[in-house]
Image (cartoon, rainbow, N blue to C red; front, side, top):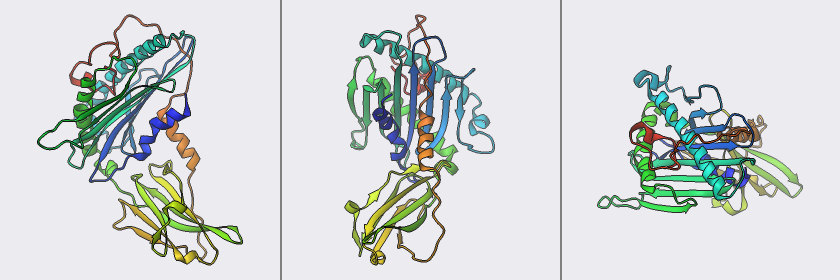
Amino acid sequence: MEPRLLLLLLSGVLAVTATSAGPHTLRHFITTLSGPGVGKSQHTVVGYVDDTEVLRFDGNVPNPRVVPRVPWTEQPWVEQEDPDFWEEHTRVYKLHQEAIQANVNDLRAHYNQSEDGSHTFQETCGCVVGSDGRFLRGFILRAYDGTETFALNVDRRTSTDQEKTAQITVQRDLLHRDNVECWRNYLENWCVQWIRRLLEKGKDRLLRADPPRTQVTRHRISDREVTLRCWALGFYPSDITLTWQRDGEDLTQDMELVETRPAGDGTFQTWAAVAVPPGQEQSYTCRVGHAGLPEPLTLRWDPSPRTTVPIVGIAAAALGLLVAAVAVAVTWRRKRSGGQGWGRGPCPPGGQAQVAVCSAS
């Protein structure tokens, strides 16, 4: 698996914003790893609403099923109101797993590859809704062994009330077998219905806004330079702004800003640093903006002794996010039994079968 593509598929997890006003995103990451020999398939689906993992499907365990990842209430809300919800989705996810294997077989044939090699199939898809719950845009991206095979965007943000038509853009369709209208129906209808339902039932968790814990620290570099670092820890959602200023003037071009990263406990962390001459630290301020703050904070370095800011395993947390989206590779071999997967036939049937997670049409 190429790291470049893996980061492409994962980048949306940290890029999505989430406030009570919206927008909100439902996104799925699907990974299938195949190889020679007889063994279990490695197929994993991870679902997110904004920055929170809400479901997971592991096709490699005995009796695989969709598992909710958020404690909505004392009991999972679907068990209270719709006992068949997860079971029906488990059935669809199993069908999707078979469809992906059919796609892998087709792609192997397209590239004239034998069944002895190891291959990776990745898929990410989802929809974005506004504060009123209406569809804004949808997206699908598939890749095989690090090469993009299908990419589709459906965007309604530029449409007017008089002309409610979405712009559909197909950036890539390697095999020319995908049913665009089927994908559009999936993104604009089922995906939107599900995210609305998840946001309503899980609003205490999914619509929360945890403000950051902040602090400015000073680090001596040399006799002529020190670094001021502005920390933001324990915040949710991940969207945040850190800006260093000198006497009120933004220093965006002169500061170092690390990518916002998960802290491992459902919150996020980041920092921004700027190099300053010793003795001029009080001329620099850090401005912090976040949905959990009633108004932006303005911070300066406090020269009084303070406890060191605890940073909770940035690298380990980032690795954990990768593990959540990518299965561990093993070898296996699966011959087709003659069934036509969704990747080889028409659009999936209606009803619950239509809600297959980004099923190939």
